[in-house]
Image (cartoon, rainbow over all chains, first blue to last red; front, side, top):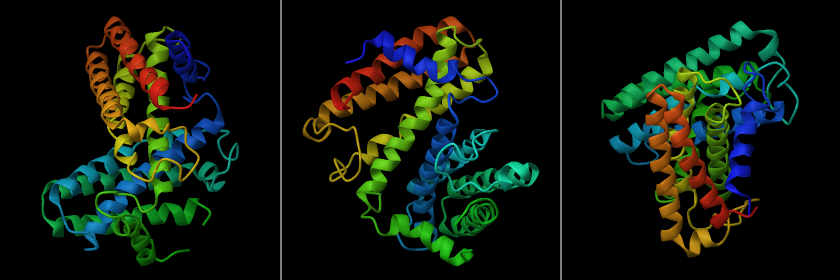
Length: 151
Length: 151
């Protein structure tokens, strides 16, 4: 059993040992972080998609809750694609992420924009609005995977 | 390269193949999901902690952004501790999570409450408020780890 002091120190050390720009103590942590954020996002996006595609019954409240989480999670992964995080651990990230940074940022900005629209559509409480917003969001995921992730 | 249709179907299948109560297609996904959410939370909590402990310079905006993410992430992992997710993949989850569910819920509710207070404290924009809220939040993490996670 750790003491609380050592627990707090361990938590604080995560950030303290990292340069402010990098935010992560180790490149492996950055890779794990972005994969984690994307996995959480994908789970919630899948639930929205199942409703948008009629595979599970539409529930406006559940759609909204999940779409809100998707939109929040969509903001997170990008800070974790910093220098030196291209191959420190197993990753599907293509080198183009770092050699075509402006294009990569266009794609991540597009996802943030589309997921924000998806969350707004989910708030409207009708499945047609959800369906209309789901397609472009999924297309945004796919465009980035096609360009920047090994399949 | 996947077609968009197959991509959308793959996303939707995540949820469609799961019973509504379970939310996850496979127990392994639930385990990966809760570990992912907790890892993302820990990264942001570490950044708040570094400021609360004076290891990185206090920046009110950064503290607030990170504390907000901590509070949002703190809500997520618990739905992924469903039946059958005790050992389907590598996990530090102790069996007590499932045999002492009321106690486990007390701990997760406590974390949600403390991280909500942490986010409110971070919004006040002074480091003393942040310090005061950080300790009880870290204690809440630790109490749950001590009781329900193998070290």
